[in-house]
Image (cartoon, rainbow, N blue to C red):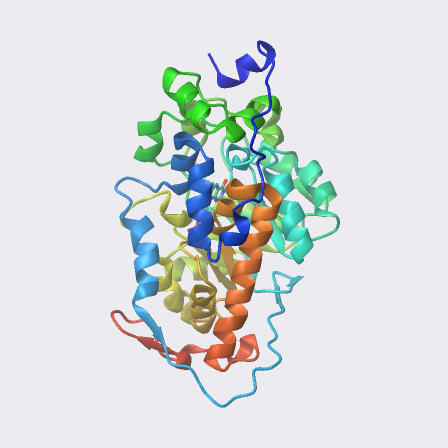
Length: 406
Ligand SMILES: Cc1cc2nc3c(=O)[nH]c(=O)nc-3n(C[C@H](O)[C@H](O)[C@H](O)COP(=O)(O)O)c2cc1C
């Protein structure tokens, strides 16, 4: 039996405490938001949010790598007017920060992508919408209210599914395409297996019922909203972990990028690049950007932190295409570090999801505010009034070679 089956069987009374912003004002950084998110979520949803591939070495390494970087600020410079605006893939943005594509965010909050896109729109930020979104591309575009959207594509099976999605994304005004290339086959995340989580519809078992009872706000909203699904995949959408696994069929090759280059007339970024020569190959095949990413440590384990390979990629293709990066970014100073290494912008995954799980739209807004404030503060303390002043001379690489050449 699915959890959603009981929607029609019982009258759901609203729990006393509102699902809201009560404790948000006491969240001073992203880790505080993460703590609040973990309190609000049942264990299965929390495992889906926090988990990494296999033994989670890469997940941990992503954060560890930031601890090995030191900055050498410049002093006595006028930083009274700090400018953070930039343009990425042709999209103007007030901060060098994009909200990452995420599958099934309705597991974290019943409004899912709609809450995220409203918060992004409020801040003028770009949101990358996943193929595995739990709201339709068109509904998300409506809620964006004209603010920029990118579309993240997963490719599998019959490419006509992708062709339809591209046409819908184009018609709805999505400006750029992110091709995720690191998920040709889907990894296992043991945390999720231990918690028995099924996406997008959790199984109803004694464990999930008890877990739901311990998280009444989440359970009430989850059960009183339409069952989560992948509306953009219509009849092709998976309904179980096994179907999801089978969907990622390992057929994506460079020829698909050539095909996409013909099929999509806007900017394209290849997401999940770690090797400099493959970044060059992406440029050869017509990509406008690469996103240096290990998928937040959620796919293959034993990969390097993206911070370790970023400078090599920048040195190889930085003069031809834009280089973006993600995985493990939780602080403004992390973003400043990546920009100093030559990244054009940073994608923020779990950091915005913690806000979403903690308090919906208000929580995502809070996550954006925290990072925005921290970016400005770090730039000011570094003596950089503009993004152009963030370069490698600010970094003192302690434990590994981050590449020092400008
Ligand atoms: C719950 C969750 C779901 C994700 N789903 C997708 C997805 O559907 N497509 C995709 O390209 N990346 C997906 N990612 C990866 C993010 O886009 C991004 O690469 C990663 O979260 C960055 O690491 P961070 O979470 O440490 O910031 C997902 C990440 C999380 C946490």
